[in-house]
Length: 205
Image 1 (cartoon, rainbow, N blue to C red):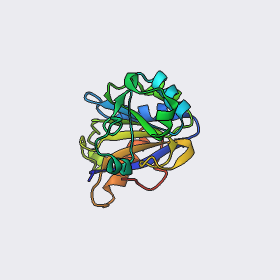
Image 2 (cartoon, rainbow, N blue to C red; image 1 turned 90 degrees about the vertical axis):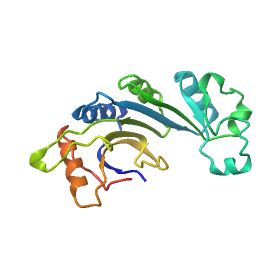
Image 3 (cartoon, rainbow, N blue to C red; image 1 turned 180 degrees about the vertical axis):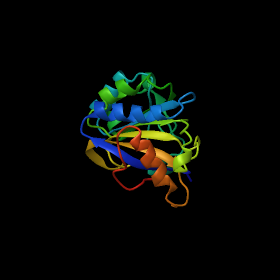
Image 4 (cartoon, rainbow, N blue to C red; image 1 turned 120 degrees about the vertical axis):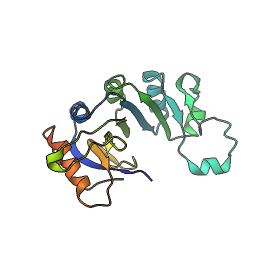
């Protein structure tokens, strides 16, 4: 089970503005070892082909547990992932495996965020900054945190599960889960304050 908990701190219909706020939050922490990953759900063949062209280093996969049960041999390689250049462009093949997910993991910060935000379109997607370090704030009883320090930008969704489509974009700040003693909310609120924001909803895990 994850030891982090995410609090929404900003929501907007403007993806560029959402990205700006997310990056401001990232900058509150130590980014020496930071990494960024992106993920996007694709429900139509034209969108799969468009993203394959726009993100040639992405990996495409299925998130269909029933498909694993039906054929654990994975003849399509879509259970483990197919690199964009090797992904079939045949509409019949692609349509039989929708929805597909495309991801790029553990990239350097500031390497893919703008391009990904620009191409996500109407699809549900996520940008996740990980391996951050939140600073000590002794006067607020907030301690340095590395293991759970993350920022998420949910594109066209409000849920970390990426299972609910929306017409706007949500930024969440992640802190260490501490048995709901109030320290999580205090920490998230302080982080949001550093970029002129506040917690706007209940936490997600």
